[in-house]
Length: 105
Image (cartoon, rainbow, N blue to C red):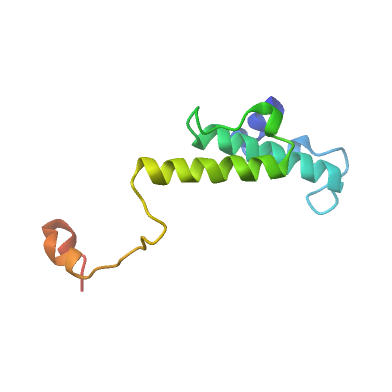
């Protein structure tokens, strides 16, 4: 995991490819492992500690899906979001905000 993290932060993921391979020729198993490592790094960078799936779950896709369904329902409960709520691009919001109004045509 640390090797992938270092390669990602330096922008050189190709440096960890097996010798003589490119993104087009890298073995499928290596690609899958790299994808999985990047996904876990993304979780570590973007989730709070209580939302991070436990290590034992990482290789189990169905457990990860269930875990994130629970995380989503907890977020909705915490922020009082119902599933019927939709984004409403209300034009009057531009008029109510004097700072944003200047961007409106």
